[in-house]
Image (cartoon, rainbow over all chains, first blue to last red; front, side):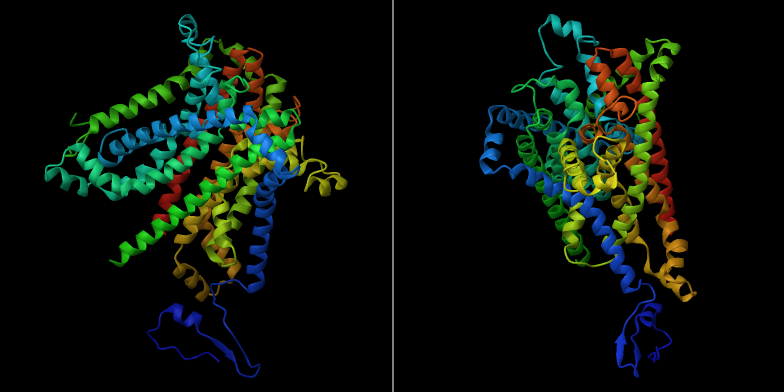
Length: 307
Length: 277
């Protein structure tokens, strides 16, 4: 029996109305805009099976393989001098690449979000360009510029400056692949915030830097952190581009992902997975921080909506 | 200046734009142009013969075929995962939602060795497939598996927001007009998702074509059989065949730029479609 609905009730009220079957003694609800329970359960099941096979099992297997031969083997693998130097180099590269792209991201977002000028869309496309270039090609183009056969190669050799097969080349290739991360996070954020607050600050007599520091920065700090975290994960994990320019010299131009490759190719699986597990941990921390910031933003938006 | 830029009282435009252009030129544009300028040193027949040897053609077929297959599987399962995450509730949903981005965050080399270990003949998954006569690791099938892994988040993350924004009224209207759930899905919901789904597919496809790190471990890397184009570029580079490596990288770059254009058009279409709805 369907409860009589008042005439002015919205469609939604009618469709969520409880349908009671007095004879069967059962009450159940089914919204006309929802799938039957068995469909829901099978779709959830199928999605989870797919994600388990393609995401969760590979993730778990990294840690399983890393600890398979015991904790001592694990500790020995990550405290090996070559591993330690790879970890140091990876941290160094990220410590240079992330701040550079942070400054770039702020400058690009300031120009694009706060001003109207011709060619803006082209500029945004150019900033996104490194995302669509194969990592291998990203490395190769630096070899073409700085390598011995490259444009600047002979001049660099004359002055005894090494860029390719040395740390500067690794830094450059990493900067290239991570250029868009922070900029593309900040541009939509700063566009959405508009220019009124900054204009008010300038009218009240603040200088450009004061305006940026006291007005813009507090508004974008979370976006800045979000972009930096993603940028950092890619910078530490980049493999293809770095592999082309590194020269794979153990203990000197090996980053963590390259060290994983060398150990793996030597059939030293336990050690390879031990170093890989550190990178997997980095990925998990990245995802946790990312989720935390997204959650915080949602709460913040809700609060603003209530005010 | 006035025709180029609208007047604003905010300072710092010249500094910000100047730095942006300088940085982009030094880091991105000049190095990228090097590939094209170096290739221009070749004559057209030379370029053509490098870019179309049987081994190179085999690598294109493999790269594009495996990328297309992986992107197709991702389109289907990506839509399913997005649907389940937006519409249903189940325990652990928040963790699953966060972990969908794992392929973005996990270094490709780690993904590569993990998948290889899983799908090798004695691996957790491989041991069940091997008796069935299905070899995954060190075959083109392995490349497909790796590319499916790295492309997984693209479709989910492009479809998810669009699905969240679909207004319940549309589905209610369909239901009151007598449509069952399947009809509502195919005639009302799917057309609204289609542009986003295509965008996600194109993004996954574009990413798969250039992928290197996760593939080389699982591929086996046999010339003509399981050798992808990015690996062929590295091989040529290691043999000091700079002209060959550069020519192939130009082929890849041209394809990437064409895909970038298509993706931008798709995103424009997707935005227009969602504004109409």
